[in-house]
Amino acid sequence: MTPELPANASRDEILEALSATPEHDIENRVRLWNRFTAAPSAPAIKVRHGGRPGTMEIWQDGRWQAG
Image 1 (cartoon, rainbow, N blue to C red):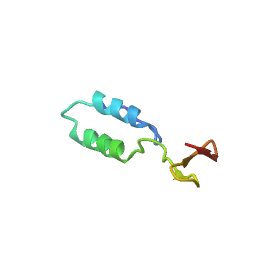
Image 2 (cartoon, rainbow, N blue to C red; image 1 turned 135 degrees about the horizontal axis):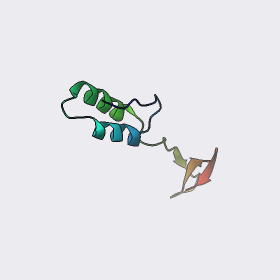
Image 3 (tube, rainbow, N blue to C red; image 1 turned 60 degrees about the vertical axis):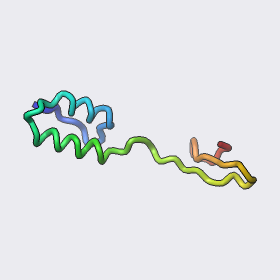
């Protein structure tokens, strides 16, 4: 029996459920694998040029910061 996961399950939770699913349960393993590959791995990182040569800024805590 495959454990039920919330819709917003993390990749780690999905991978744990996939590991706990028996190999013969192909349907659920495929379903979990599809969820795992579609889940975001990390928040998107926004970077921009810092205005001077060789500098950049990173969007963090709701504002641009030197990176």
